[in-house]
Length: 130
Image (cartoon, rainbow, N blue to C red):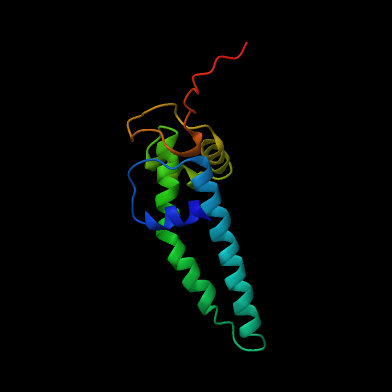
């Protein structure tokens, strides 16, 4: 939930980097919220014309933050946000972008900023194991 809140607080920040955990937790929580809101709309409007008001609002609320965290995730793999449009290429584009989103972060700093979060290498404890 912390990753979701962190991503929502940077809802229009297209610079910087987003770790895999931040990206995927945001996507999981936003997907569950969208599914829940559509289910709630279905229950509330059963038997009447389908006015999916709650689901539409929740979906609209997540549009910009989803795009921002997506671009920051691409930055974390040292790719520009323009790769987002590669998804328009049927099948190949979607699979390629999915591989990018699942790949490891660029170690250390890259052109989009320093590495942060759970994908960052852990500092040495100073103890040497034999």
